[in-house]
Amino acid sequence: MIGGAIGLLSAAVALGVGHLTAGLVGGTSSPVIAVGSTAIDASPEWLKSYAIRTFGTNDKAVLVAGIGAVVAIVSIIVGVVALQRPRVGVVALVALGTVGATAAVARPENGLGAAVPSTAATVAGLLTFWRLRRSAGLATSVTGAGDAEAIAPASFDRRRFLLAGAGAAGLAAVSGLAGRFLIRRAEASASRAAVRIPAPADVAPLPPAGADLHIADVGPFITPNDRFYRVDTSILVPSVTAEGWTLRVHGMVRKEVSLDYASLLARPLMERDVTLTCVSNPVGGGYIGNARWIGAPLADLLNEAGVDPAADQIVSRSVDGFTVGTPTAVVMDGRDAMLAVAMNGEPLPLEHGFPVRMIVPGLYGYVSATKWLVDIELTTFGAYDAYWVRRGWAQQAPIKTESRIDTPKQSATVAAGRVTVAGIAWAQHRGISTVEVSVDGDAWRPARLAAEDTIDTWRQWVFAWDASPGDHTLAVRATDDTGATQTATQADPVPNGATGDHTISVTVAG
Ligand SMILES: Nc1nc2c(c(=O)[nH]1)N[C@H]1C(S)=C(S)[C@@H](COP(=O)(O)O)O[C@H]1N2
Ligand SMILES: [Mo]
Image (cartoon, rainbow, N blue to C red; front, side, top):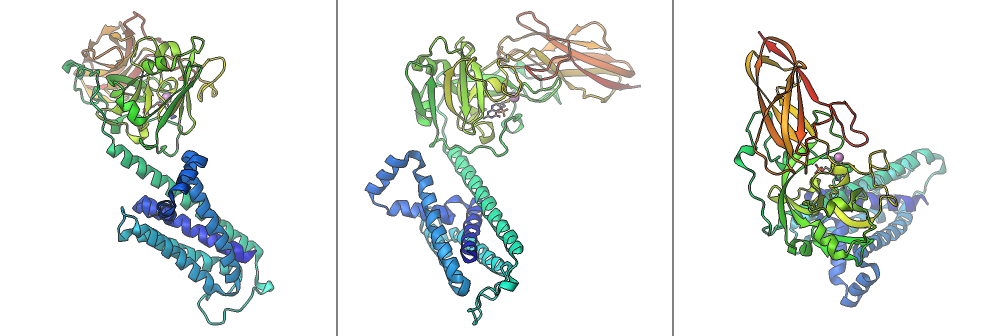
């Protein structure tokens, strides 16, 4: 029992640490992956096709599990033998590392450095072996001559051994999972770096020069990717490669459609500026950004699948299980709903949904903007509640007409005289018609609007204020192209988006 546990845990820590080290220096050098790849290369064609037929895309996972099972059995046997003859354990761990290092270095894509993870694995395995022996009250000198001692029952502290064993198991699990995460992320990054987005068939004109007022403290009209807000439920960004990506369109359709990344890129692509907004954005908040997206029209794909007229909800699903419910009628009403592959001239960044996400102008992100999209199911609102709907948010959530003051900042002190008050206003898919500013609750006065790009984008505005010394409040409100002015009543983001005029206090120095 004890011998088997020591053997198994030492091997597990070795492989976990090896995997983690590979996550830092390069995934193909992981002893597990290197041995697995070597096994794949060495196996005959009939075995490979049998594995693919039987296990499908899980064939690699089955192989890794198989390698794990072999290592587990061997390490338990070695552990039992090593109880009396610790040198056997040392030799076995060194042999394990040597096999891993040899396989890793022999991979065509690797160099000598690929031996590092297996070396780290061996060291970690030996240290674990030594620690666990010690906590079991066994001789700590594993190389000494007198190896014949058995456990002296009196010196065996069960509690101490169990604690050390649990620590080793935890270390193996954490390092193995961390290694897997790092390796997958590196694979997704490499995949993204290799992607070439074709020129869109339907190009968007550049935003008009006047769309950006270039006022300090008002963000640029197009939000750079590294400054774009990010909202999702993932602690760790999901790693998906373009090569491994597929999308299935199913449910209430005439015929199911499946497509891979290459066939998505082969479709006619469109380019559009769309402002994304999060329903959680409080009045005056920053969960909003505007980007130039390239993607395949979603309505065309749905028409190919043939949507059942009764299917009033499109449920889209991310690789991590997150779901979004979008009204079918909205996606099909002619607006530029798309399966986006590029953001501001680059393949989607990993944290913004690489390789494919949904974009639907006019709807808050949680009902439209699924990142790491892998599945689209046509269903009904009656039949299914998506992720945030189950948590109390509205089933349907068009973006509300809103505006924000970006300069001056809340509680700022400004000099008396001409003060530039400026910010943004948005009413995606309706368009902004006017923005007004009120000082100290007095009459609303019109701000100057930047040129409109499209009705799906935000609009900057600026207001010249003759500021007199003292404390003042500034408020802003927007009116959209339907003639509706934003709701003045303050409301929280739950369940369908915050309302209220963004109001700030400033001090004007005398
Ligand atoms: N897979 C996945 N997609 C998601 C989310 C998520 O949690 N998981 N959050 C949604 C929400 S609430 C918003 S506001 C947008 C944010 O997109 P961004 O992070 O690219 O700005 O993504 C949407 N898509
Ligand atoms: Mo959101």
